[in-house]
Amino acid sequence: MNTSPKKAHALIERKNSAVPRGIANSTGVFVEKASGAVITDVDGREFLDFYAGVGVLNVGHCPEPVVKAIKQQADQLLHSFFAIAMYEPYVALAEKLNSLMPGSAPKKTMFANSGAEAVENAVKIARHATKRTGIIAFEAAFHGRTFMTMSLTSKVKPYKYGFGPLAPEIYKVPSAYCYRCHYCSVYPACGLHCLENFERFFTAEIDAEHIAAMIIEPIQGEGGFIVPPREFLPGLKAICEKKGILLIADEVQTGFGRTGKMFAVENWGVEPDIMTTAKSIAAGVPLSAVTGKAEYMDAPDAGNIGGTYGGNPLACVAGLETIKLIEEQQLCRQAARIGDTTLTRLKALQEKCPTIGDVRGIGAMIGIELVKDRQTKEPAKEMTARIVKYCLEQGVMLISAGIFSNVIRLLIPLVVTDEQLDRGLTVLEQSILRAAAESR
Image 1 (cartoon, helix red, strand yellow):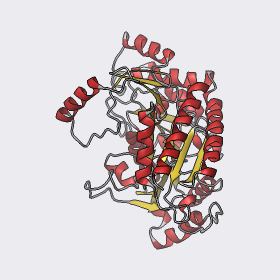
Image 2 (cartoon, one colour):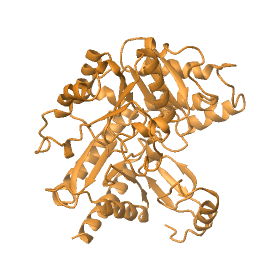
Image 3 (cartoon, helix red, strand yellow):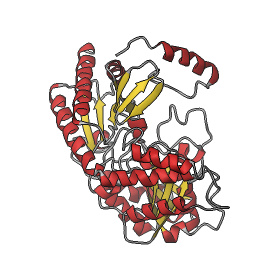
Image 4 (tube, one colour):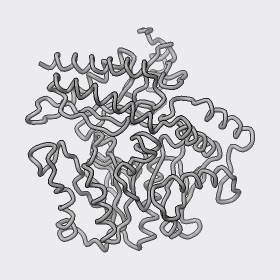
């Protein structure tokens, strides 16, 4: 691999002069092209992509059928505001998402541009449908960086610090973070106190009749790939049904095959009332969706929801082709296979590497939580950063997560080859062992 990135250095200087420092970058890499699970930078260096644009590229970079569909659509129509002059791809993709969302009730879908926009609209729809205003979110959540979604998000720095005051009527409750449970002293023994606390919450904090919706990522992403116990999500759904609260599943990162199912909630047999999607919906073209039961989606009046670019024609045809690829290539099954291979290797590494506190995940959504000591579980933030750096130096690009910044998250493209998967995991294992040895 070329170790003298001269073009990248020049571009970094231009970037620092033209782009605000709030737009961060952790690698210094400028991409020239990418295909499948491989990124090539402007200096000709190749990287295995094990972060997939933060979960955007489940079908890999530049899949040929998607690129072809975008080019064909570009020759016909680049933009039309759907509220004025409509076009078929919007309707066709809405129909497809309605058919895929769990549950037998009639569904409807609207489109926006980003995951944060989808969440904002889901909150609006839930409030309008229920005539209530309160929203319950969970510790360790990430729902975006706009005003409302920043307020729903849990991690203070860098997402909320200095941007207050936050949106009102947001209520936070503990998530099912079993490895760091406030109540269970022995992991993974679970007393489901996270569910029991709701009875106290509705007495001590806010009456349930004031709550419009509860929003949760089925597997918390930025929070550290936190996988709840099997009873948790069904328990939340039961609480919501009992109290007349809508359950919003934020599937922005977990959706479209990532966990071995089209949507992560299917792993628990839960039917949400409203679901938000984005990221891997369109192979990298900006698009998001709110899909929900028709009775709730139809609550807002005409013109209450929508936006100029939401459901752009290029994005919609990309979405249709992306979903077709996932289905035809059986990428949900591939995600499960990637997960089995990866978890087996990382669990074996955990047995001989005491800095690995926890390995968790479903399908190809896997987190490695690093600690300084397994007894105290003190987060190993600095070690995590070194491992990410060592992997990058050896041509594997991945990222960290977690409210303590001590979780390595793997979002491997579902089209990765067996050779690429083996090579990337070997680099990761070697980097973890190296960083652990340096910390002794």
